[in-house]
Length: 219
DNA sequence: ACATTAAGTGATT
DNA sequence: AATCACTTAATGT
Figure 1 (tube, rainbow, N blue to C red):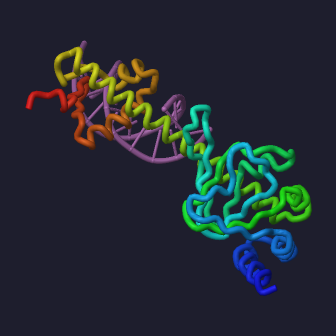
Figure 2 (figure 1 turned 120 degrees about the vertical axis):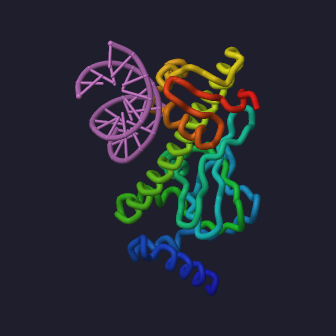
Figure 3 (figure 1 turned 30 degrees about the vertical axis):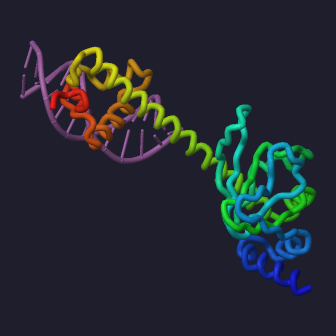
């Protein structure tokens, strides 16, 4: 009794601003509070999905596993977050494509998947919550992909400049940003921006039609 | 002085 | 990252 009251309070304080009264009450009665200690798995790849987690405290790291067994970090779940992957597969009875591990002492509220569809039509606040978290998760992943692409181009540019200086036997290169962009299948604007950063990092100097690769310059 | 080309920047997708 | 639109700087005629 005292236990259920405590849980109810926790849920109320966390979600009352987000959800309507009726939903908070249902959440409290149907939800199951679970504590996950550090490095414990809340979910592993291939396991059947029976519940949707709502994070009450702590943080979860959500990952995928590729065929080599390498872990690929997808995103973190924190206070008030829920797992988009789980939300997505909830209509079918499917198995998890992801692994969730606790980064710290974490408390989650487990909601049976059957409640998903029911609440989706019943509560507009729940619908908004699900759609919202799905959206923010998607944006996080897009950002991550963007970052990777950016780093790859930057590394390609550095390699290009080095190779070029190597065959010229000099750090003095007579090239335009436009030519570099063509060689790297990029656009002039992108190269200009990356070059500007390299210049500010002290790796190169720039003039019109000319680039000095400082690490290949006589000292 | 004027035109042309290279490089820099902000905003948008 | 790529594209667009626009500015600024350097160079050639």
